[in-house]
Image (cartoon, rainbow, N blue to C red; front, side, top):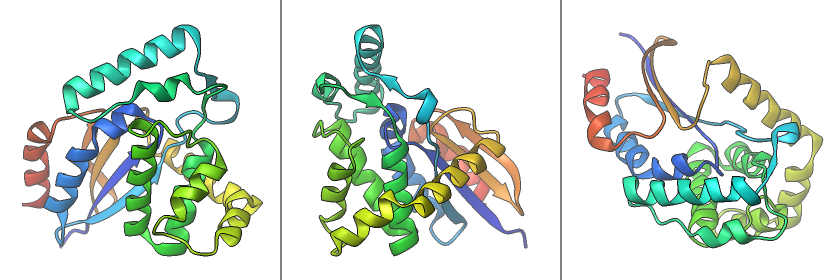
Length: 209
C-alpha cells in the first residue's frame, strides 16, 4: 500500500495563504487518518528580498487585501499597512512557527501559524517583530518566555529555518500557498495558489480514494 502525504507550503505574511486558511482547514479534516500532513514555511521575502511597505508597493498590497477579502471572505485589516517602517520580511514569523514545531509539535505549530496570521491580517499587529511573536507565543503556547526568546534568536534556529527555505525551493515551489499530494514521495497532484475548497475537493477525494 502506497504511503500518502500532503505537503502544505505557506508563508505567514502571504495574504493568499491567509485566504487559503478555510480551504486548508477543510482539506486537513478530509485527510484525517487517510494521509500524512506536513507543513513548511516558505520564507517568501527574507534578507536581500525584503521590501519596505510604502508607495506603490503599499497600494498594490492594499489591492491584494481587498481581493483576498472578496474571493475568500477572510477579514483583512489594511491598517497594518500603515505601520511605520513596516517591511515585508517573513524571516522571524517563519522562525517562530518552526521553533514552536520543534518544541511542541506540528499541530501546535499550525495553530500558532494561524494565530500570527490573524494577528497580522485581522488585528494589524506587526509580526515581523520578535517581541510581538513572543507575546503571541505566550498566549497559550509557551511559558518560559526568556527561553523562547533565546531559542528564537539563536543561530541554531536561524540555520534550521534557512534549511527549511532551501528544502521548499528544492521542491519546485514557486509561489505560496502550494499544496502537493504525494504517493511514496512522488508528487501526484498539486494545488498552486489560492483555490476555493469546492474547486479543491475533487482532487482531495481522488487522492484519498
